[in-house]
Amino acid sequence: MYPVPESYRQAMAAAVRSERLRGALALADGGVLTFGPADLMSGSVTLDDQCVTGEELQFGCVYLGQAAFQLRTSLSRYRLYGAQLTLTYGLQLADGSWFDLPLGVYTVAEAERTSLCVAIHAYDNILKLDGDYTGPALQGTPYDMLCQIAEHCGLAVGMTGAEMAAWPNAGETFQLDTQDGCATWRDCLAAVAQVVGAFGAADRAGALVLRRFAAEPCRTLGPGARSGAAVADYVCRYRALAVQAGSRRLASEAADADGLVMTMTEAPLFAKGLPERAQALCDALFASLRAIEYVPASVTGVADPTFDCGDRLTLTEPGEASGLTVAETLVTHRVWKFRGGGTLKGVGKNPCLAAARDKSSAALQQLQTQTASNRLIFYSFVSRAAVTAGEQEQTAAYVNFVTVEKTGALFFAQLLTEARPAQAGGTVTLAVHYYLNGARIGGFAPAQRMAAGRHTLALFYPFTELAADTSNRFEVRLQAAGGTVYTAAGDLRGVVTGQGMAGGAVWDGTLTLEDSLPPPAWDAAALAPGPLQGTAAVQAAAPQACTLTETLPALRWAAGALTLDPLAAQGPDIQQEGET
Image (cartoon, rainbow, N blue to C red; front, side):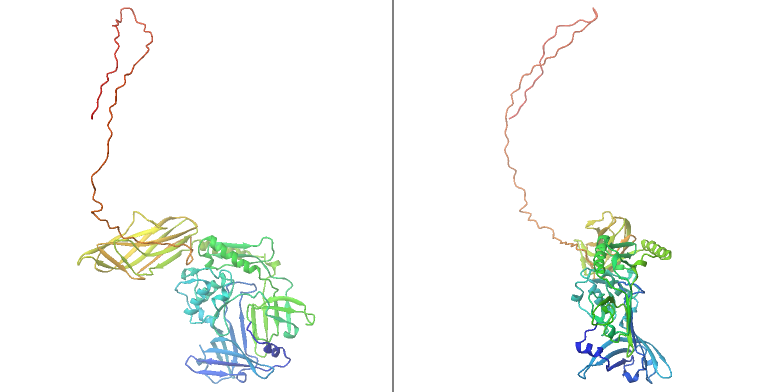
């Protein structure tokens, strides 16, 4: 809700009020056309915007705000196309002064000439986000990514990082690129809004903002501030959050509660990183969703244009003296007419009907899941600094990628180099070494002999077996012999691609430190061998006599077959040897 002083509220609540509407059209050819109430067809000015899809609360919506009016002018309608429109509402206060309230900044998209006027339809600055998104990659915290989107679309940012600090997942870092299914910049903003439980919008000054559904009421609307109200007989609260991010399914649920289930089917930032991190993001977002509780309602006849989508309102019973609260509702749709009142609507599904699900929806979701499981993921990377490779290995570039299932992947790269031989007319041999998770991949090191000058190398390596649920770091290192090889920043561009992979965060907390030490310098004189010294002990060993005794069994011999000679005792043959 736009902040206004108490004097404005008193003037708005008065039975009779004086109001005006002024506008300015900055034409594409440089001209400026200003107008006031006398230039407008009575009852023709309408502002219309919303922040959800259909009849259900949703995170991550980014809708165009619209302005329509009929202008009395002789100006050619062709000069109005692309003009920037600024609208300002004025209310006269009790002291006679005027309070001016900005209504928004728009771009004229349609201008149709009639016999009396030109019917103009204009859209707010979200229109500038409808350009094709072809890069570069967005990375950082959600606020950082919001700033990058605004910069690329030529818009200002209407909020600070401190305003987002307490939002769920606001301190996490993410990366979003062209492989994540975002066709336009508006899709990118929607993905960022999803992860913090917000919706995207252009504020009244035309700046880009993210907004959340309010937790506390900003105004109380009694019977005197409205002409009618339709209030639902049920309360919208949420018991679960389901996220479908590619082939990954996440869920957070309060088992002891009843209510609705919010389902997000296109959430690319939840597909990034390991499943544990994605589940933590989902849990943090669900904790915020659990705090949202409201009654759907539609309030008509509200003449005050200060309300915004996302506001929470309190509705009271007829007879304001009682002060009884009917309900608290959220503004999801807003229509305001100059001198014609307006409508504030809060949509929401009946929890009793939330479980109804037709077979077509189930079949479509199953088909989407099957298609996502076969999706190719691309991790592109570029060398960030210049490298001069010599005898010592130098890291030219690296990429972190995550596998969510056992899979394989392919590495492709193009390397631009400049060979600098140590001798005139000589050559340099460049060897390329691959490292996976800090370990060198042995048995495969492409080498190229190069003369002085510029050269191009095409690099390739297949990863045949990558473990599931693993964060991997792949490095390309260069080593040269016979001179040096120079590679400028950005001259190594590569990609790791495969199925069963998920996008990685900008930084997962891993620090990789590396330092190259020169070969040690040895003093030859200090290492010269000297004479060997030692002592030896010599001792004579006296021989020891030994006795051999053996008992033989009795022998039976045939008479006359054997003649025995007398046995002679004989000791062992012992010799004494020694030296001194």
